[in-house]
Amino acid sequence: MSPLTLPNPCRICGCWYLVRVWPGRGRIDRAWCAPCEASFARPTNRCKQCSLRTAPGITHCADCQQTAPNWSLGAAAVDYAYPWSALISAYKSGTDVGLGHGFARLMTHNAGTRAILTNADGWVGIPLTPAKLARRGFHQIHDLMNQLQQQLKRPPRILHSALEPLRHASAQKTLNLRERMGNIHNLFATTKGTHDLRGLHLVVIDDVSTTGATLHAATAVLLKAGAASVNVVAFARTPKPDG
Image (cartoon, rainbow, N blue to C red; front, side):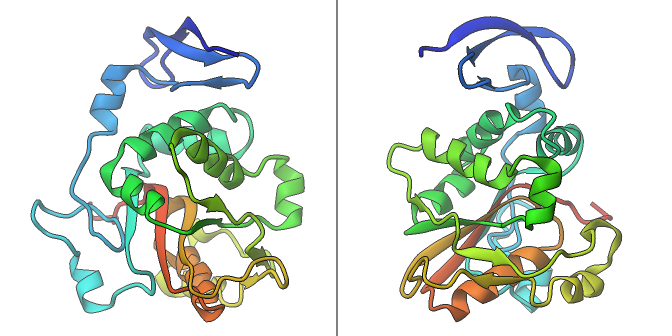
């Protein structure tokens, strides 16, 4: 079905704007107006590994120069801050699943995330435990990957079941970096007999990267399974507390 063009109130500023809507799929092109997108999703220089903001001309932040993550390249489209933090919460909780199309749109329009997404043999999403999935009734990472795949002309394949959660991790947001790394120890495993990952160039996709601990755990498992390389992409990256 072709999309309709309808008036919609911006989820950020509240002003009305015209947007494309796919009624049958419950999707809108973006839930925010063009001026808000220009203000809050402005391209910025980021570290090519952890995706924290850096000064122009700096390719790697000081932390990554000293101790690099176990993945090769990383990118994010926006900061996990106003207004995206609240919109991501609504998306993850399943109260506004239509936001996924707009998030994917920002990722495919961002040069850093688009390059990593397209130059891969396959995408691997961070999995949810069965208990968390049952509680939410919505797997936001699977939805986000499906939206990304629809918006790219020749997308890599999605390896939906490449990783499985071994246990439920405690909420990461209340923990420091050392606690986060311990919290995600032995968190994931490769799903036996589903995919041969040997020699593949993979991208791990998550909605938010806070310290990178979860991405680190997923990357370690995929490399151990024989992946040739692992890059990571998140929709949003949490800034350092000091900015």
